[in-house]
Amino acid sequence: MKATEKTRKELEKRVEKLERLIAKKGIGSDYLGKAERVQRNLNIALFVGTTAVVAGIVIWSASRFGE
Figure 1: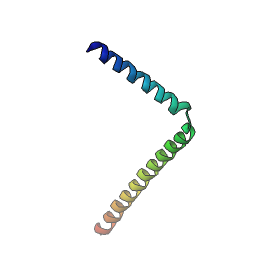
Figure 2: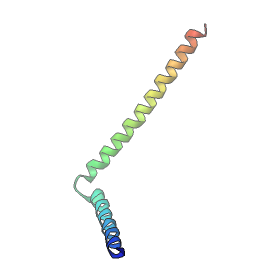
Figure 3: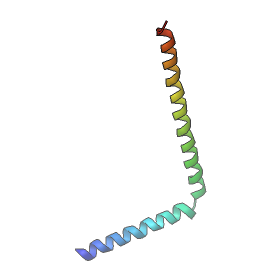
Figure 4: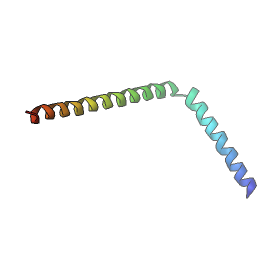
């Protein structure tokens, strides 16, 4: 049991190492990097937009009901 478990863990490490290498230098790695940047920028824009909308609603309701 110990030998099979050790072998399985070693194979998993090698597969993960190979996957990292492919992600870094493989086909489509440039595209993946660009896609990650676009996704990050969209998430930031969505967060900022949502925050602005919520702040606007709070200011509007405070001025409307504060009268």
